[in-house]
Length: 78
Image 1: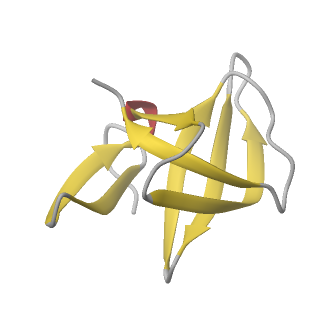
Image 2: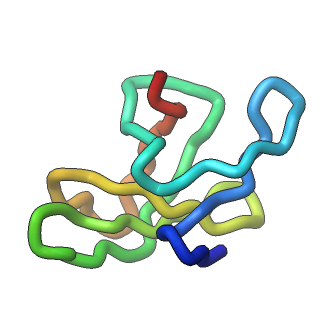
């Protein structure tokens, strides 16, 4: 989902649907939010990563490129 202020995601966390911007997510070792990377867009200072989670697309930012096909876990930053 796109927004005036950047890419946003609708993600269920603790049983509630939350609107989360791509910069609010971070890669972690393990979580309930497992994503398979499908594209990585270089934006100059960082990458916008597109991934699939169950039947929806998830967008998040990363300082490094993540290989297409990688399975990673995300969580909302504190």
